[in-house]
Image (cartoon, rainbow, N blue to C red; front, side):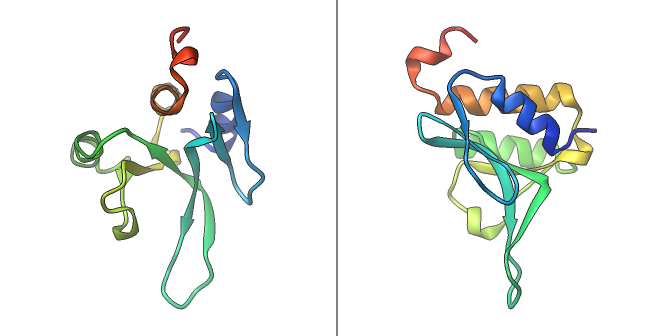
Length: 119
């Protein structure tokens, strides 16, 4: 079972990552977000930052659909994310090994090319 502390530890272990001040977690490389806390919005209610759910950059719609269809217990989306290469990850359902892979892949897709050769 993974949690927000695992996300923070993994993200900050990657080169040139900065954490943006937020109510949850928000990590960027080269000023480009790659993993952050899910800002859940429900009609008529204030936004709630969910630190048990991570939003991950996945690169493209094909990868997004593969994750959503292949592992529906782990990944989900919301209509406000339609057309965006982002998925939500249920951290309590995710192993730390799988989280490591996902965070590293998201970082690799967002990092400047000169950084990605080492990982």
